[in-house]
Image (cartoon, rainbow over all chains, first blue to last red):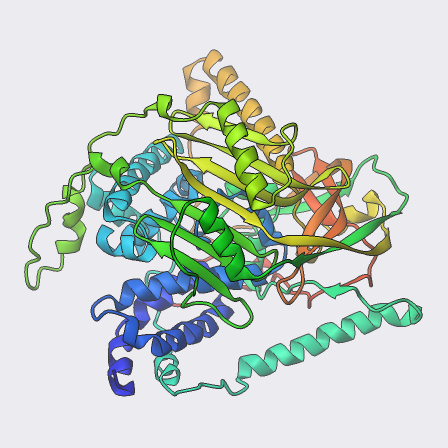
Length: 163
Length: 450
């Protein structure tokens, strides 16, 4: 892949990556992390399958965000300690404007939030979510199914209107 | 509610949906081989900022020039404005009820009946121990995994990480901070209840395709099989054996066990001088009764000496400054959540007992319009109990330290963990101002147009 091709293919994903990073990082860090992300993509371009660039970008971005957060002060470590250990640090703490939905969202287990955010907010399908999270597609389908059910239950409980 | 309705509801609530993409040069720059980022405006600003922080420390230490240099520099948050405000709220254990628009409440912390005498405490450095790839191999061997460690795509010189991955497992180690390793294995058979999805062929030009595709993703309900999961005693025995092989000191009296119909886990905090510190090893079992995850650290704890600490009363003044926050062993937080759960269930019981209308009205959402700027409500919080503990703090290089701290409990039912050493012992990062609410629309308005 030439620099021109790389530029064309990856530039097309800038809107999604901008939003993905902005939902999870302080605004002043977004561009720096994006720079690192695309630099890794360039260095690894030969191993990234054509058509799977976006899931790869999301997957790698999750780790860069986790590293970035590790670099931050110990105050974030509190959140880290409360979290069930998983194979990879998660990057989910998206802000939602709907207060009832935000409240319900906070009540979901982190793994469910993560899958749900990729499905609903990033707009990925389960096959791509599976690639991002390194899980089987079936596992993602089950997790999504539970997450939706749990979110709706919590949403209705917090006073959200579902109709 | 249909799937696409839920999806739309979440999309509608997304505060970043209409964000403009960043400048395209970020991609073009990446393709310039061996990119050495020139000092950008941000880099220059950060340098100026760090000089400012250094000046701050000099300012603190000059009057006592004979004192030793700060032991380490706490990590900077890199946050400002709204993010800093949100993060500050997250750093307290009230974070689970995270408010999206900070500033609706401002907390005024008041010490009530706390000790006014300072004391002293030991600071420890948490040093990574061993070779990361060898540690991975050891963990892999314990769990019967084949494979060679590979450096991750996202690994950097500053934050190296390595993994051994397969179709149904992953072992990773992050060679920064306390050098945590994580093992995860999932049983594909477990997902037998979920049929392969029947995908509809996308229709050219049909922009609605993606919002309806998920209808076919309906999985058969999976029933738990608790008989497969080891009993608590069996989990403790297995954990003792596995932790022993992994080099983790295990004490049954201090291990915490959890089990339900879907799985279980055993966690073992690292103990220092008889106290749990915020480094904990875990082993978890999935619904098939097999070990599905495990995690631990490879560290040595090195004392860096004894240092004076401020009083609990003085520590209350630090609650409003996120730079003094630390984190303690998870057992402290679990106590809090256990208390909260008991209190919440009591409230629910009382509400149910008092009849329908009152309880119904208490569940109604707050009559607040998020689109409208709102004056913050000042809440007095009385800090009325303190205990000492070792808290984790991270320096600017991502290394972990254990420092004397106070756990400050307040009358609102939550607590904050505040580093107790006197100023000058630890270099603080540059303070960030949280702009007052009425000076910035950005803090309270959704992201449209920002």
